[in-house]
Length: 282
Image 1 (cartoon, helix red, strand yellow):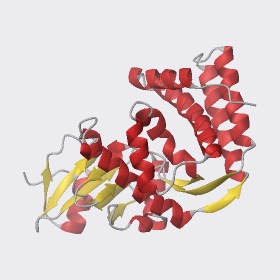
Image 2: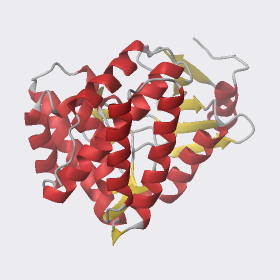
Image 3: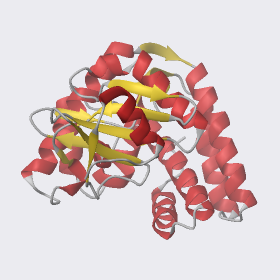
Image 4: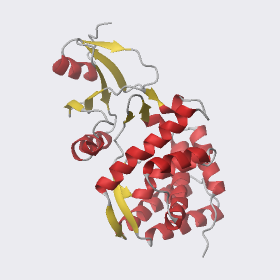
């Protein structure tokens, strides 16, 4: 159908592209719409609910997505007043739709490693203590929220605090990280595509592996192998130990967000990750 909506996303598209059609895409979240211009080109219009998420994604497109040319959408237009972005649409199939154990799933993880490795190498900074100290401070805030909501017993609280101390005293290299790097944000087609950059910032490089490790790889270790084959190298012993501490962050944030959003699946994920954590070796 011809879009005549007063929706800010459609209005921005009209301003820049002229008349557009709305293309049905049930896989997209409600705040995102796929559009087709008169010449057949496809675009994505996205309206953020939160101003800081809008500002973060807009900054990412200006500062860092250039390192992902060919693998990321291009920013075509913006409306700061309504927190709306107009982006080119990537072609391909969502990686979270591939059958578990399929060749396509394994290929997606290999390509994801390859592209993330390019981003990390282009933006790497040497080891330092500032990143760990900042992470530990933010992590302690999540622990405090979990305790306030009565989501942790005393032993669990002490375990998470121990991991916070480890992060706060660790030296780790940093890079520009996606920080929501998982199959739901990947497309596999003629090339590998990534989207959703609202969380992107400089952070501990190893942290970009955490969601994959604790949401995918522990149940399917061949995907971890494929990813790091594409990435160019596997984590060393120190990085593997740090990844365990990033799992502690994953557990705390999932528990708190699951509780706040009444999301039983997310809460269960946080509880599962927490149960797998061990006290680090002295």
